[in-house]
Length: 424
DNA sequence: TCTGGGGTCCTAGGACCC
DNA sequence: TCTGGGGTCCTAGGACCC
Image (tube, rainbow, N blue to C red; front, side, top):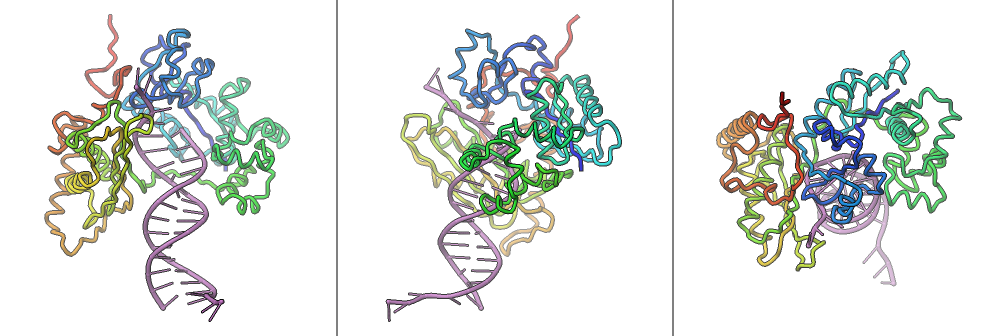
């Protein structure tokens, strides 16, 4: 097997730069919701020492002193740019896995050509067609492709394309000896510490470990990582999207909420969003969890609670689920707290196809509800989200309304009113 | 003043069964 | 004083990813 991993460099920042070329060459960061912390950094911003996830209030001073530019996140824009990028990449292989908003694996199995040159062509095509710079990593397994991508990004000599399959064993070993073990896909903070305690500091040292012992000392994931580093495939390419086993819709609020009514509005809309995603993958739920909480970062009285709710018969109806969610909310809501977060989590997701009705279920009602939801989704898709919603979601009340987004750019590609128009 | 939102997989331990 | 062995299912929590 041979895989390539293509990922967008500073993807969110690059999307912004496509529409505002003046941002090129400047230190920019894209902030999370509520303008909370940096979730994307340009090379220039990294050079200023800004870490991933750095809170904005801690790096704000760099705007004055170093010309750092911060933008609120514009997920509609990034989602659309991602779709376009993935489509372009998909032309280069019959098998593609879209791993995240900015990363895609493709299979290069059986490709009898110069893979390094092929990687370069992919990179150049994406740049030419949508203006997003990427890096390409090629390896025998997904883990090796990830590692190659890391080299392509970190070491300028590769020019953005690193093909491990073109190197000798000794060359690969030498690269692995220079690479700290935590650069591996799947080694986070805790595992890094544990491995370090055992004297395993480099990728090379990890690859040398006995997978069976590693399974005992850690878990199966660690064993798989070692096999993958040795070129033995353990993680396969997922070319067809698998239905989600969990769906979460939650928000933190820039300005805390104290009133039950407002919290009901928020939860109602979050539930509607989650239900829409549920129907999109043609699933139902039998259980869900709602949660609310104050901010642990504020020095106000703290309260956090959640409630697991069971549904009578499997459903994906916004109407039914919202009713249950709001009823649950009233049970866990307490007065006199400053709520900073709310959300709903769907667990126990099952296919919508052969729904087993409960004894007490009115089947006709259920079918009508499904039809109603299909119409709602259709209208919201054609005329913009939130065109139709439940009355409990309130009038023009959206969770995003409570979000701080002071630096957001326009939806250049998905909103007629915000298209970029060249002036003569 | 100010710290995101969305996921996955694995393991341990409890409840329950025979 | 003594308290099986084996199995399943479920849940909570930890670790990781982007």
